[in-house]
Image (cartoon, rainbow over all chains, first blue to last red; front, side, top):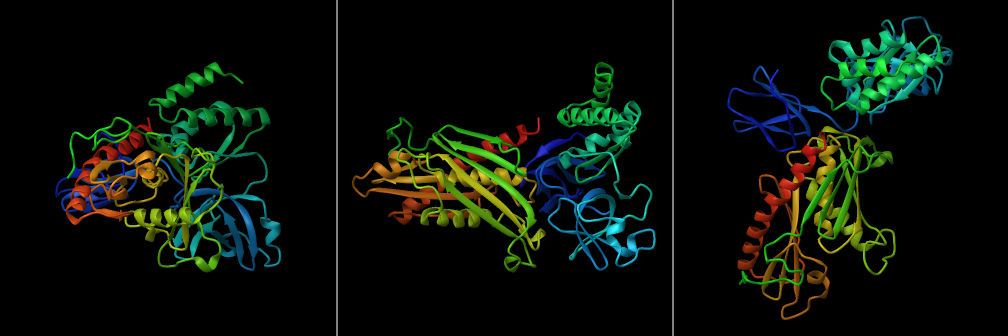
Length: 221
Length: 234
């Protein structure tokens, strides 16, 4: 891993013909210039910018949590916090659904966990054809800043695994910032929420997993 | 031409900027925000979006829309000004849009809108420059892709004397000889001009001098903006 630095739009990240422009960057002559504000990273001669602020940018394969806004004749329109509306078609539901009974599966105002399987000019297409996806029946839902989601999940899921183990709750983190906690008791769910909020508040810290372990010993439920 | 020994009413040299401050993330509910000040002039910019554009008939499927809204708060000047949009604020909103337009990569957001709200909470001339500087930082903070940051500065002319970063007295009180001229200029970080206004009279030769002065000041402003953005993440 190379050293990371904060760059602003228009700032040169690296100079040299061997470098390739990655996400959030552009090639100008033999310089790689940042187009976005965030952390610059060079890896295998590829320079890119990791955004740290701003609205959620939908990406293919992301697990998200959204609220059903509208029922149409062939699917659900879901608000996932992006400018484009996301659509969950009937064909992406893993069981047979009667065309007049859409509200029996997920009704307007209800929340669902879904996966983004395509982004095109018309909008975002969702799917619930995998394990762990579908309507949310019970539990605790709250929203955090989407830019802090990677921190909450941790390297290869280390942070979220720690929270799950310590609280005994099942936690689903949507890339758009929504978090769903489901535990046996409401106390456990609130305990998990407090831990997640601790992580988001200390997100700039290095060695945060250790810090969270300390937090757990200090704040027994 | 420019008298290098000239001392201004607030004690500054002819080519001296007022002390600048900049801060990022001042509006917690916005997607991006920043504050920028030149001495007593303070501007706050908040960016919302990209988001859906309503009404639908204004949508542009080829590229996104950048909407700027410049507003001077009623308590920002000594005599209370009538709140709400005015001829002047509508014009400055449009000017700000044009100053930012060339750097903001708006074509990545078809059918969407990015709203920039600029509030002047205290005014002592050069408000549009402070507003543009704050807006550029706020847009970067909102994670909007941009070719570069823009930096704006005003150059004035008192009678025949050129001055940098016009203040209240130099903008609206001074009235001797040829009178006061105000020239706000906006630059990208590679020193290209995206906005240039001229209110008054000036000769071709002096105008070249004006641009040189503004170029030098641009570097200082850019450093302040850059520092604020880099510190925001620590």
